[in-house]
Image 1 (cartoon, helix red, strand yellow):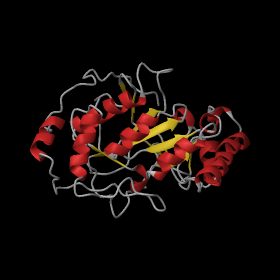
Image 2 (cartoon, one colour; image 1 turned 180 degrees about the vertical axis):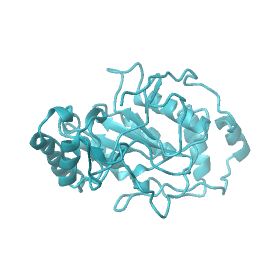
Image 3 (spheres, rainbow, N blue to C red; image 1 turned 60 degrees about the horizontal axis):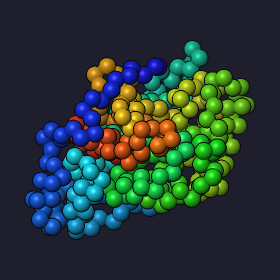
Image 4 (cartoon, rainbow, N blue to C red; image 1 turned 180 degrees about the horizontal axis):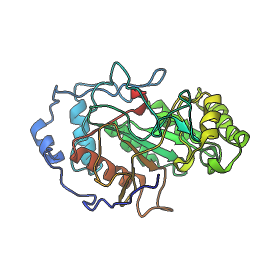
Length: 297
């Protein structure tokens, strides 16, 4: 499906409606921690937590929001659901005119009533250390989908984010247009990336994103053979200077998957920090927290 392009005209400095500003929260805290609802982000099995919850964790978040020039302190996600929502495919599992209900589902939104969205970041070209520090300071979870040709020059950068509790997933070896390849070629792109992920990061993922969000029946059959269980794409995409939407209402919805990319000044008029500032200001302004995708799968 082709995305409907709409620009977020509120800009990077838009005010937060119905939320305390960073400065206001800092004044209220007066250096003291608040005991309210600061739920630690839960890591996936076998991963390290982002940070241990500390008595002054909310004060630290206020300071981090000021440091990174956010309009408001990002909202903390609720605890992940005990019973995971049933994920179904965007096309009702229909692939090439046939229903195959055992293939990895392709989806843009996770069914949930919680006001959460999921941040996913693709490719791996830009390796900005300030991005790692920003997301660590703010304790924002995200999922990375990696293509080997872009990350192989510095696997260590992505090991650092993995050590913070972020999940690394499969985005193929070379980022091709998969429907243009044969089944065997698609299997090579996906399965060989699984092998590299296991070698470099300790495990082969079960989540895969087809490049450009394009796939066919062979893509999903190959992915299943390679050990993939889910194939999420996205509902919104954030850039350093605008948003793009699949829907016409230009708003977020509970469970939406948001896409962005590891890019920098060579491709954008800004940095990944600028991109994340736009993302966090909008989701916070609309009353959403950022949760980890894998906690809902």
